[in-house]
Image 1: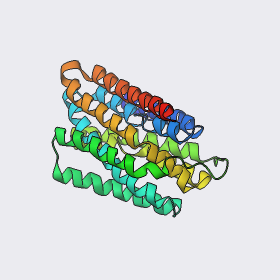
Image 2 (image 1 turned 180 degrees about the horizontal axis):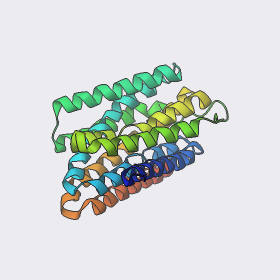
Image 3 (image 1 turned 30 degrees about the vertical axis):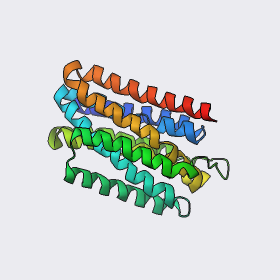
Image 4 (image 1 turned 90 degrees about the vertical axis):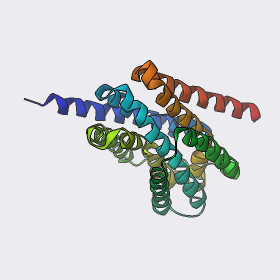
Length: 261
């Protein structure tokens, strides 16, 4: 007889992979601004948090959101390294340097253990500053029409399925903070680098990352809302609130950008 736990784990992995692949395919067919707005939605962390909420109480989710805020802030290191390196170097070097910057930033944040107000303020300040630094790189366009090798969609689905399975399996052993950090791994951003740069060039891919700086403020604020709301409102309402904040923030950014143009 098949273990029900294994069936549930397989379902979690398949659901998370389907959500991320579907949203990422939409991002590929858009310009850098729209692609960034889609890529910075919680299409990877969201399904993982839903499954964590099924297995753990609201206190676990609230504490996990703090870990995810640190991971989200670490994306600033990833974005900074990638946007500037992608103007001159190839995919492998850029991705390796970006992931190394993310890991180094996350470990530094874990060592410093900043408080919740400091994490929130740093998210706003750091990504606001990055947006100003990235302004010369926001409008780059592809050098050639994108063509997708057959293996990229299965590879992306495998990455996300592995993330969902790993986080939900390890969550009982590593605690809420590391579970939150793992849930917010930059799977989508890394996948976009791997898929897009060989096809459309580094500057155009960097434009997607650069346009996402302000959007990651919204993700950080959403995680802050989950942290504050999980205990009084429950995990379900807190996660719904966080999703609403992400979507509302990104829609507002798109509207403001169109208005400015």
